[in-house]
Image (tube, rainbow, N blue to C red; front, side, top):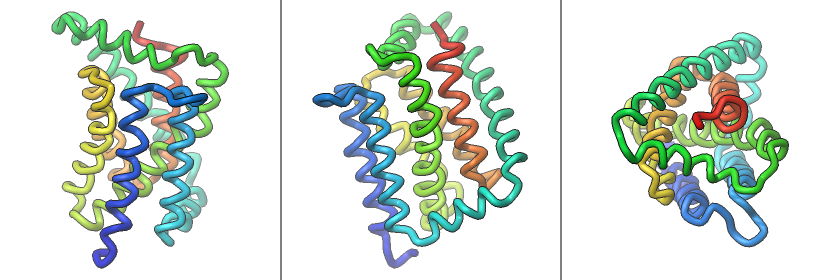
Length: 213
């Protein structure tokens, strides 16, 4: 692996190229934010599977070994993360004058997309897909290349960095917190399933069922 750095850097560069404009423009042509995000993740996951021969076998092993326990861990961690954001939401609104506007702007990404479409894309592609790429591919490989702590930190930093195009401090900070949280969860469990369940349930709670508005 150390002799093939392109396998670690090329997908990361592709993620920057795909996601940075997404947060700047929120759509392109017929693709709104949700279709663009979903399509980008499908491309990145496909590239990861094509470039890394260990990718799919590791995912199959993950699914075969105690999936029920991993689903429960993911659900519990999603509840913990939602609680963190619940209190952080109240505190940030009280402390920072720009917080309310920034939080409201995050929900502006919804646009005219229907509740059903957003829910299906979050549950079936975006939530699981982000973890398949950011943790299951990128963090795993970067931890092997750069060391566990630096690999986790670098993956979490890039995850936050692709949100810079939004120009929204609240969204960027939220992405940084989430990147570290799911990075640590992946480190502790070694399971993309646990991270995917956590990410998906958190997304659905925050964006659709229990939003901070």
